[in-house]
Length: 148
Image 1 (cartoon, rainbow, N blue to C red):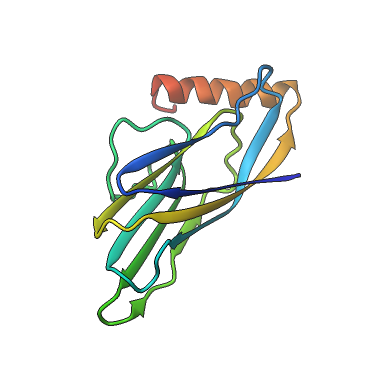
Image 2: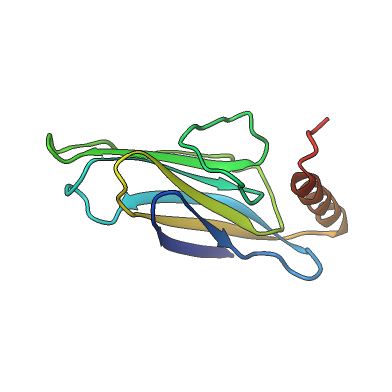
């Protein structure tokens, strides 16, 4: 089953996508992540939206694929004066399965236009072993214990 979430974010904000359950037996995997400015062609914007496994205490436009809390990242550049629109670049770590809330962040390197996001999650029934592994990973992430 596919679950969808969408939202409109102001620059330098964070949204929470509530997914946790009492027993943790439902897992999720990101299958689609799309972004779009809410007023194309009206202002310059260099937007970075990211999806994390844990709530972020600070927000930057830098993207670090070595961050094990990062689930997906998207960047979009739009320059109104030259009518130059780049297609958003999106990377999803689609093998990551999680069973807790996820967090969407938005930071702009230029401009402050609001940005839309759309997320599709594949819902997965977890057996007891998968549930335990996903829950332990989420606990490790909450405690910010490095893997290994």
